[in-house]
Amino acid sequence: ITRRNELNDLIKGGLNGELYEVTETWRNYYQIIGRDNAVIDKLKAMPDDFMDPAKRDQYLAECLFLRACAYSRLITLFGDVPYTETTIDIETGLTMGRTPKAEVLQKIYADFDYAIENLPVSSGSVQRATKGAAYGMKARIALYNQDWNTAIECTKACMDLGVYDLYP
Image (cartoon, rainbow, N blue to C red; front, side, top):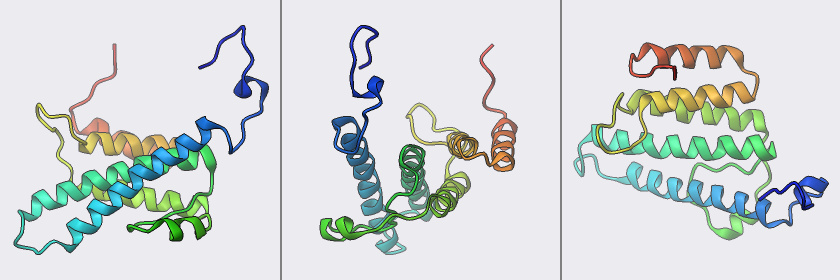
């Protein structure tokens, strides 16, 4: 929380990797990624006749969407970050190096692309990830990384869905 009459580490420019806000942000996003990767691993290992393939693709797309959102936030805040697409143990996680931001961004784009292909245009009364959300989030991370062409393509595709309007 920031207050005008009170100095804190953020206002003083003293933010570092030991502060609660930094460590908790890092931990929370990697918990999201770890849980998504666990579900992705289970979905991919499922026998083909276990569930409707279209439903499995949608669940996989939802997980990839969430993983892409989490990595998007991490590279925006920290730049190069450790990247994994599978479930790993703590020891492995602690010894991983950082993956270059540009490489992680391409993997984020691939996750969003899968989500765009496999998510519905509308989720009905239940709030779930949609095709428009995937287009929007891909456009957002593209803007943050000055990838203007990708941002334009995704924004145009989202508008072409015919579902969303600008707030008057």
